Image (cartoon, rainbow, N blue to C red; front, side):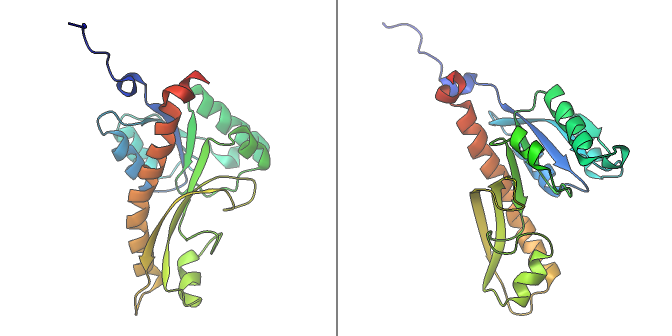
Length: 211
């Protein structure tokens, strides 16, 4: 008899603390929070921060016992001071990975460098196509056969970071920006949790923990 078996290492690793930044409803934030409720999830949402006090996603976070914090960008005299408060709030909650979920502020190079390799975003297009806004309208106007969404690392250039994962949807005859957006959004709610799980699973690995 060799004694009790050694528990699997992965079951002993704590979930990675994730902070989510939103500006509005935060439907992708909701998808991330729900995925984090799975048994032995690779990450835990430890705070949701909005730059607007009327962001509806704050109510969802609070209802799920997640600290819901407002850091109003209008209360600061510069982007740098706003982002300094943002970073301080994230660090105060022990955040290791930051997920942007409909956060409608362009982040400065200084903030991006501070969180480099720990800052992710989801964008409603198949990057590198259609960076920026109005992606669904632009995809239809361009006569694209397909559209979709991309999870990527945030870099100093807007929507230019390394791609982590993508989901594709066909563009159908008669599609409008609204019908196309709805199908893409459904894919976002699956893709983003899957990509964040991939990131956080890697961060929880014994090799990563020891470095």
